[in-house]
Image 1: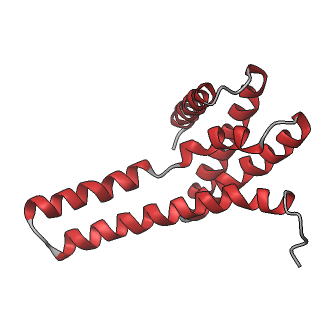
Image 2: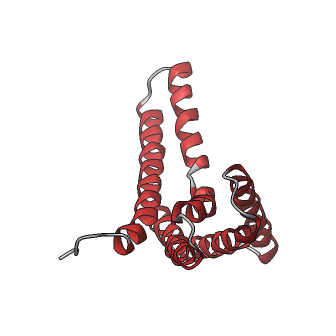
Length: 153
């Protein structure tokens, strides 16, 4: 991936974040924090993928870094943490993998059952499931660590 492609993808991810910030009516002064967390999350995910990590692992760490920053900024500025975290990690949703699973399911319905199509559909389905699970874990771990009332141990 060259630098121009990386910058274009970061810009598109920031556009997604900006749209969600507008939809959640986040105050203007905090949109920059969300955009910064988006850039850090995207660079973390792409850096781990470039190092050969699995997509779910890269998504987990790509979601956890903005989540930790979101909890920190939320405590510092007196905002609810999800108002900062959700717009900055929504770009990590596995759209292409889930789309491929759905297309393969439609192909099974159109062409009839075939074991290779079924295996392909289940591979895409489970990959999307693991990425969504990693996203949920990456979002929830900072909240569990910082907003827990009782001690963990």
